Amino acid sequence: MKEAIFLSLALLVPACGDEPTVSFGLDINALASDRPPEFAQGMCREPGEYSSSVAVSLDAPAEGEYNQLFLESDADAEDNVYHLRVYIAEEREPGQVWWEPGEILAERTYDHEFGERSEQDSFVVDYEGDQYTVNVVGLPAAGTCATRAADSVDAVQ
Image (cartoon, rainbow, N blue to C red; front, side):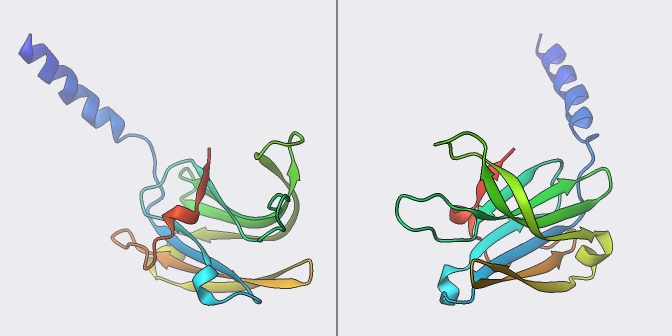
């Protein structure tokens, strides 16, 4: 019986590694021009991601209102890229917290070379009179994010 269990596990482990993953990562942060640096929103996409989407809210709405501005990254393991976009959300259903992208304010795609070279990109998005600066740093396969803002990241899958 023990041999059958070990054999099953031995066959299962290699099968788990067949799913493609993105070979690099991204360290992303965004900050509104009217906020101090400690209020930057961060997102870490470490090397080895597969097909998943992660989003973080960038705006600070008034009490009782919902967040409208989101930064979202999609891992595309088949093409070994990350798609990054900043959008104004539209409510999916009134009163719900799940959002659908509405107007896209900025969109970028980062590839393997960007990550392996630890390249940097920065762009500014205007929303309701405020400017949001988004900084993106590529992470090589063995890289890790400089800052972890796990508490500020909302996973959407």
